[in-house]
Each structure stands twice: as structure tokens, then as C-alpha cells.
Image 1 (spheres, rainbow, N blue to C red):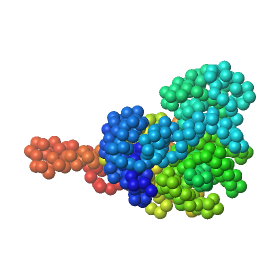
Image 2: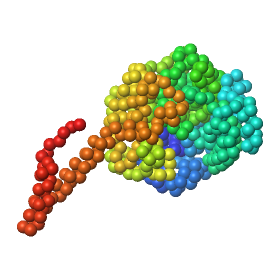
Image 3: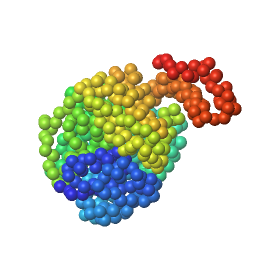
Length: 512
């Protein structure tokens, strides 16, 4: 087992990995940018080293600086978490060249799955159904138009190296090809350094279901069941569940077998996730594979009872997977809400700033994966996710009701968050019934419904007015108590009289 690990990430996932290290009696080394000097992951780790200025290109994506810290701190391995360098084959290869273990799959596996066209070809060869689309890269608008003659409209125009909701556009008619092609090509080049594109048929009303797998260096592969990830906004997941409510036992077994087969075809090692689209007829189509730990891994951990981060570390250290597939079962139901520092009333714009107050929900079945603390600053330079709230219940309804209770208890002051948006989703009849797909938010969330995010807005405004009135009252009373001059006393008394007439001194209020 390793003695010391560097965590090449920040925020809640860096804290999460550090906790796993402590349970394995491994020392942890954090890295931080200038903007994260006082962050929770820095305070929590055993050692911490600066790696550069706030912009991620100069810090968390600066491979040379991170490897320099790794050498200086004497670590044996690096855990990349998710995002940043987690799916960068060059970084995985550089770790190998420096004699440092990369806690993840081989650079070759990352490369194959990072190229979506190659990934499609590999899965087709393994007899795993893929979403109908182009067999290769499309180099012009004309080639895109020709490819649509086979698959038809609508379709998704996607970046070969894309991921995380970036580098894709939905195209519904021939007139939209030109603008979509230019936009996606430009975004792909700037975000991934790779402008290549391909297309896939857009499956209307499909559900996004994924399967968690674990594989060791000795050929053993197991799946840890499925997750529902259909609640998305702008192709970004917001709420995840385990197990997926859309699947029956037969479908669940079949999907798990497909995921294991695909992983074996890739000769995969470590933790990974195969993502599928499930259409209205219950047919599965491979979408992509994430060669890293997923943001939503915690819901799987909660129902299966396996610590995925510890398993990653043990496999990377040369350990065997101790489980056979028949030994792995799931119990109950888990739901995760991603807590973002963003303003739902202002088109979900990021809301950086200082957290002036923080109270996390507690109680049976509640887990908080949090990357901030009261008094911490949320910088503008990174993803606005500050925490994850994970809830377990004996069944889906209990998990939903417990999540609704926990969201009511969750208090963040100083910045705005998407907690009201989660509350709106958790109250929606379609979500309660499990009747949703990847288009749920687009279908149901309209500007007229934004008022539902704040059903007690009138009460809040009245409370604010009463608070302002009491502040004025207290100011006047302080002047009286100080024994101001006769002229001042009468002047202030004159100001207080209207307050008495309006009931400002009654001390009584009505609860609504």
C-alpha cells in the first residue's frame, strides 16, 4: 500500500479522497492555487503546496508544476479526482514516466475512450449497441449534411474529444447545420484543443442511465449496478439516483453484463462508468465511457456499501478485487443533489462570494460531501459546485421525502445557491412518479414557474420590512438611553410616535 498520495484536485472531491486516505492510514498531499489558499481541502490534508495563480491553466492544469510538487513531497501516487487532469492521457503518461502511480486507468484506455469515434468503434466490435451516427470524423458542413441522409433529424453534433456537457448542439433542421457546425467546432477547439466532430441520432424522450464498474489488474471486472442521471440542465447532471427507477430486474442484469463486456474489451483497470441512453421501448445504446471517478459515485457507495475511492487506491497499488459479482447487492435507494453557488432567478449565473453562514442538514440517512465552510470564499475561477447532498432511504419515496426535509434544513448565507431549484424538482409530480427523461427541465421549467422556487416570497418581503422597522426602532431607543439633550429627546420621541401607531412596539406578530 502507498504511504503518501498527492490529490491533484480541489474542493469537495479533494476532501473526499483525503478522508479515504486517512482510513487507509495514507498521508495526503494537497495542492492549491492562490485563490484556494484558505480552502477546506488545504486545511484538511496532511501537507499542502501552492501550484500557481488562480486560473486553472496556471495551477490545477499545470502538469509540470504538479509533478514537481509530487517529487518534492515524496508521494508514490497521484489521485486526479474528476475534472481537471482526471481524463488527460498525457498526464497519466507523464506520471508513469516519473515513476509515480496514476490512480486511474492506463493512458491508452483514457485515450481510446476520450476519442468518442474510437470508443463507438470499440463498443460496436464488442457487440454493444451504440447510438446510430457517423462512423468517422466529419470535416465539413457538407459531410454533416450527407451523414444526416442516413440517420435523419434531429441529431446531436458532438466534439470527438467532448465531455461535461461541452462541445455539442442539437440540430433539428438542415438550416441549423451551418451555425451549429461553426459553434461546436469553435468550442471543441477552445475547450479540448481538438476541433474534430461527429454526429449521433438524437433519441427523443430518452433516459440517461449509467453503470459503475470496477476492474483490477488481473482481469476481474464487476459492476456496481446502475444510476439514473436524466435530470439535466444544459446537458449537465443535477440530480442522480441509484438504482435507476426506469429499470426492472431483467433490464438491470442485461445492462450490467453489457458494461462488464465493454470494460473487458478495453482491458480496463480501475473505477469507470459506462453511460447509456435508454429509449421509450427499453432499448439500450452506449453513449460514452468516463474513465474516472464520477461526481455521483456517492449514491452507488450508499446502496452497495463499497467505498469506491478506497477500491481505486487498492487496485492501483496492485490489489485484487475481493468481490465476485454474485456477492454484490444493492439495498434501498439513494439520491444526490449537486449544490451549486449560482442564482436560479438570474439564469443560473455563478454566484461567487463569501459564505457568511452555513448549516448542513443532519439525521438518519444523510451524507454531506462539502468543500466549503462558514467564512470560506467561493472563487469565480472554477466550477460553482460547492457540495453534494446524498440521501438514503429504504425505498425511493422515503429517499425523496428525506431529501425534501434535508433541503429545507440546508442553509447557506452570503451567496445564492440552487437549493430552491432542487426543492422545485423534488416537489414535481413527474419526478415523484419517476416519469421523466433528459428533457424534463426543458419541458417543465418555464419562466412563469420560477415563482415556484420561492413560494414564500411575500412572507420574506414582509419579514424584511418588519426587520427594517425594528432596526429603526432600536436606533431611536439607543439615542434615548444615552441621555441625549432635551431637544434631541423630543425630536426622537416624535419619530417614535408613528411607530407606536403602526404597532412597532407591540412585540406581537402573526405567524403565517
